[in-house]
Structures are given as structure tokens and as C-alpha cells.
Amino acid sequence: MNMAHWLARTAARAGGTPALFHGQEQVADYAQFFRAAQGVATALSARGVTPGDRVVIFMKNVPEYLVVLYGIWICGAAAVPVNAKLHGKEARQICEASGAKLAFVTEDTGRALAAFTDLPCIDVAAPAFADMTASDPAQIAPRGPDDLAWLFFTSGTTGTPKGVIITHGMLAAMSLAYLADVDDVHARDGAFYMAPMSHGAGLYALVHVLRGARHICPASGGFEADELLAAARAMGPLSMFMAPTMVRRITDAATKTGDRGDGIKTIIYGGGPMYVADIVEAVDWFGPKFVQIYGQGECPMAITVLGREDVADRQTPGWETRLASVGTAQSVVELGIGDAEGNPLAPGDVGEIMVRGLPVMQGYWQDTAATSKTIRNGWLMTGDMGYLDADGYLTLRDRSKDVIISGGTNIYPREVEEALLTHDGVREVSVLGRANAEWGEDVVAFVVAREGVTEAALEAHCLAQIARFKRPKAYFFTDDLPKNNYGKVLKTELRARLKEMYDD
Image: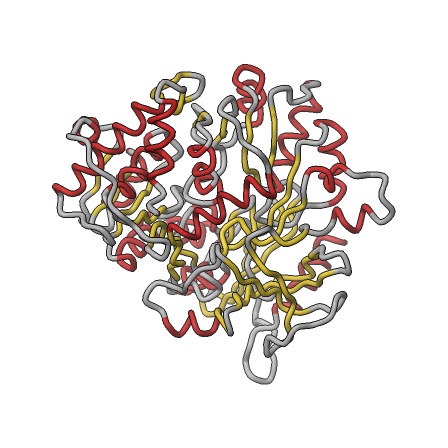
């Protein structure tokens, strides 16, 4: 089934229901939303886009995002959402890897992409896009559950983009698991998009379309705590996805002003470690409005869930330990812990987290080697380490990869290192995460450099190569990097150095 059918059904039964908002201004009801998406589909077909083709969405959070997404699906193509914070060069790499026919952009992302590629770009604020939405309405192209719907590129620790094949069937399973395990959705609800719609926040749009809820893009285009609190008072009930660091910031903002978050229905958090003290304080202030999920691009938003009752529980013996977990398996997956060979381990034993089920990817885009390494005997080997207790609660023990998670966004040290190594004055570099109370982690670099290289020069070099949020926040110049007998840099020793610096 094509996921666009959910939009068509909602438009048919409740076409006058408010659908798309920019701030507090309604820009479309469901009938208008569906009609605009049908027009985009017709226009895409006229431009040579056929079922199975890929179309990039390199846009900030605006209402047109969903019109574009559903227009792509109606014509049978697949969306390639790209984080709007990426550098134009990085976005071009994804465009090329996906073989995209064209890209939809907002003004700023369009400029960034145009500097590095001649891929046709359509600015959703331009008259040409309005003309597309007014095209004759297209019929929904047939798509099966195994057909590509969403091609999600994640760099991985190698820095080389890998495209996760997310199918229509995976999206349906993930969305139905939301209703079964995470939260219910009603037409009166509003989905508030502060986190990037290219990631989890956008995936959660689908279940809200199914139930005919409102879709609200903040006027700021991103996360502003005061804006959220004001929107909740005026437009609630609102539900949203947050990184743990965003939960910390919204709690700080609300306690400072005495705002209890009236109008906030549900805050789903994930994408990084949540400190127990932070979630305890958030629940104490806002009440039982929080749900935690754990997922990966390879099994989007659908591995485990820690429900609002567990998050708010302060009576059950051992509740602190349970609150430090990421919950139990969602309804549509089977969860396991395996050793290095994938053999199952007993409860309490730490090993690699494995998952299989309907929302697990088929594989990586045009990368059979990476697929065979990650999918073994039907199990997705997540690369994350953890253990299951006797009640089925999963606790993450460590990341087996060196991914830095800053503000809920993955930053891969290898790609930052490679960018720095293109500077003529850099001989060696090692990048790692440093604890940060606001963002969870930030990026720092240990650099072996030639004489005369300055922090300012490296900062300018990074800004020309990679997205601003990935650049190191501190540089530590050193004569050499600690290495083992095989020449591998010992990041554990560098982390110990960092600890000594900040403990003194």
C-alpha cells in the first residue's frame, strides 16, 4: 500500500479539518493539503519522475514539506530527506549517491546546494512551486509494502553515506506501533515540528495524517522553548519529538517563568542519552507527559518504548533503574542481545542489541557488503551494546561506535577528521565527544599540526567543508597522538586527557 492512501482517506472523510499551520496561521485543510500534493505529483510526472525514482527534500521545517513528501509518494517516487543543517557539499553527496532526479529546497538550502551541483532545484517559496500544486490532480500510483518510500542517508562511522532503504511497509508498521505502544492520536491533536522533519519528527507525521491531526511548523523554523510554550497554550493539545537536550532546555525555560506546559500533551524523547535527574525534574514540573523511544535509521523509531507510566513511576521498587532503561520491545519487533557471533545471551548479559521485525530495513542502498555485515540471519545488528533484564527492559550500556551525539544529532568523528586532514597544515587528528551539560556532547579535536597553524584557520577550513554544527568547539594541539602497536589512535587515552583537563 502506498502511504499516500492515508492522506487521501483523511481528506475524503474530513476534508475541512485543519491540517497545515505555519505558526498559528492555518495554511491548508486536509482537502487542500491532498489537492496540493496531487498537483505536485502531476508536475513531477511531467518532469520525467517515474515510480521508483528518487527526489531529494533539502528543506527547513515548513508546511510545504509535507505537501512535497506526499506529492512524491502519490507519483510513486521515493523521498530522500536531507538534514537542512548539512553543508551544500554534504547534501550534494547524498543527491549523487541516491541518483535523485531533482530536489525541493527552501531559499537558504537552495543556495547551499546550488553552489555544488547543477541538480534541478525547486524552491517551495517560488511561484513555480505554486504552479505545481495547481496542476491537474494525479491518481495515487500503486506501491507495495517492499517498495522504497524514504531513503535515509546516515554516514556511519566511516563518514561514507549509507542509504537506509525504508519501505512503505516499514512506515506503516512504525506508524501503527506508535498507536499501539507510544501514544494515541486524535483529530484535535497537533504535531509540533521543532526537530528536523528529515528525521524522526517527520516520520511521526504519518500517524498524525492517518488520524487527521494538525501539523504545525513553528514560525522560527526550529526549536525555541518560549515559542513552544506559547504555542501549546494557544494551540494545544500538542505532541512533539525532542532530543534529551531539548527536554533539558524546555524544563529550564518553563521553571524560570513558572509555565507548567499547559497544552503540551506528549513529549517523545530519544536520539541520545537522557540523564535520570533531568527526566525526573521534567516530570516533576510538567507531569506525566513523557515517553521515551529507541530506534535507528535501520529500524526507524520502533525498537523499544518506555511508556509515560514507567517514565512517571516513583513507587515501584527499582524505578530508578527502569527509568535509566529505554523500555521494552515495541509490538512490531523482536528484541535480542547477542555475542560477537550473534548467538543469544541470557538476561543481564551485555552484548550487541539485535532486532528483527516489520520495521527493520531490507538493506542499504546499493551496498551489499554493508547490508550483509549489518543484517545477519534476519537480525539487524545495531552496533549498540546493552542488556535485557528479566522483565524485558533494555538498558544501553555503551555505543560500540564512536558516534558523537550533540543535541540529538549524530556527528561522526571520521568525517570531521577527514575534513581537517585536507588542511595542508594538519598532519594527524583525532576527534571525539566532550560532555556538555546543554547539548549532551560537543566535538573536540586533538591535532598534530605544522608550525603556524591556528585554531582560527582550522575553524574557517571546517566551515568550508562540513556543516557548522559538526565543527570542533575546541582544538587541542599536541606533538603526537597516543597509538597502539598497530598504529591505531587510542581514543581512550585522549578521553582520559580530556577528563584530566576538566577535572583539574
